[in-house]
Length: 156
Image (cartoon, rainbow, N blue to C red; front, top):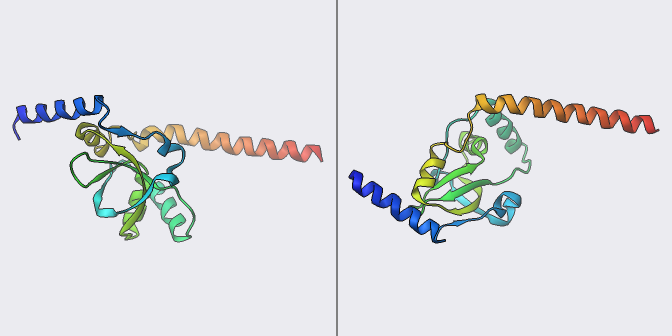
């Protein structure tokens, strides 16, 4: 592919998307179960910015048959391949457990540029970044739970 071919492809992708030919389904993030499809795992591509701890948590949940949300994916506009938009840890947990098919929620089809950015993790923050956010959120949850428990105990 020449440079001119690449830019022509990008222009075509974005012009179609801007004209409403590409579809983005925001409701998939609110109720992913409504959009569940079963996809072969080899048709999924995911960014590798994940933590072993996160993968292990989902592997344990899958082994215990706990309910987990479907992986949210976007379809490539011209190929039969899907990029993981949300659920990278779940994807790698399924992969490591040898699952051949995965429950996914289809968010829509995107231009190949958006697909490329999703596939290569430009929308996925690094574990180092999220670690600084995740631990304070866990602490807040624990402290709030403890506060509510103490408050309810004081009423009795």
